[in-house]
Length: 171
Image 1 (spheres, helix red, strand yellow):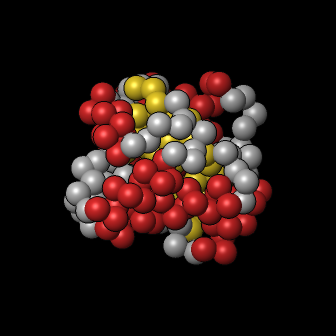
Image 2: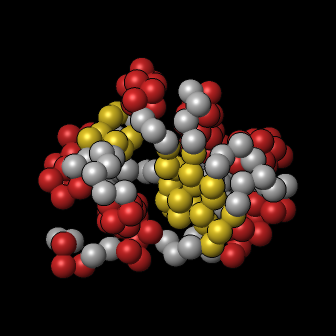
């Protein structure tokens, strides 16, 4: 996700995901790709045991993926190209790396689209059909994936991860 950029909404999504996943994966050790790894570890390390690596350093990302059991891509509106194509291809590239390393991938709490470019639509279809599970945050995102031709992994609608925040634990 878009973590470590001091964006309150994205940080709320991360906090919600960590809260939910810690409940269903006791003892897990989350590793977050972050723009500011020391800050991400300071905020979430004590509460959820988060470690973070620099999202811009490909060697760190490759090492993290090799050591991981799976990749969770999300949440938020990562798979869209209205803010520019670089962001879309960054997130798809991380998913491709994980799959090349044999790691299962889950899209969690994703808001899909809009994806306006022909190459963007093709790339999302190609990559999304190769992940293991897709959890989108609204019906429009599921419809967008169906329109793109994503048919292979199960697609389920769930709430935005930020809604899972445990408010007494959030400063």
